[in-house]
Amino acid sequence: NAGVMQNPRHLVRRRGQEARLRCSPVKGHSHVYWYRQLPEEGLKFMVYLQKENIIDESGMPKERFSAEFPKEGPSILRIQQVVRGDSAAYFCASSPAPTSGNTIYFGEGSWLTVV
Amino acid sequence: GENVEQHPSTLSVQEGDSAVIKCTYSDSASNYFPWYKQELGKRPQLIIDIRSNVGEKKDQRIAVTLNKTAKHFSLHITETQPEDSAVYFCAASNESGGSNYKLTFGKGTLLTVNP
Image (cartoon, rainbow over the protein chains, first blue to last red):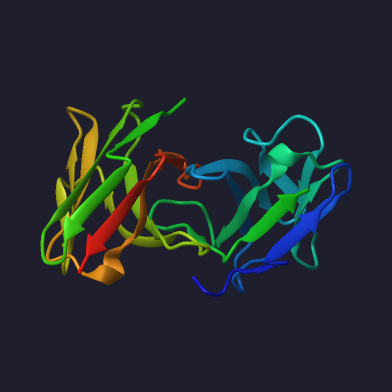
């Protein structure tokens, strides 16, 4: 669904820097999901957020990664002290509610390259 | 947790031929199976999905079949065209309790349709 907006589309960071990826859901959607796609791999679930709440972060690495979805503004995926292994495409998706029949559509993605 | 295996990893066909991609899943509780098409540098786009209450679903040149007993599902593309060339991903999730957001993806199949 073209309504999920992500930025930046491409981001280059040096090892040790911080990366911030933003996701604006489809208007009216209050549920946001982040997935990561490593090179030549399928997508892997990271985190599910509702406004001001983390619902499921079972796919988030234990360290350096955090996510938020504030009352106002986009959802942010933050990666501190990036390493080369963080280089990946990060996709955001949104839905009105994660119930049966609400299919997941992804945004255009943010490609992070760590040099 | 769920594990999805996808085969083949690469598939090359002549224009007009059919292409079949197969996936197996491990969690018998999974009941939602979408297929995504991803072109290079683009987001995965949902092309078709199936739920476990049906065995087959068709949309023009694309069809998906599901065998719950054997825990496998397949994507069939007939009359392939060069624009069908892309990476195709299968995925599985359990929609019970409204958790269809947590998709487990296969590793993808690179389909090349030769003119």
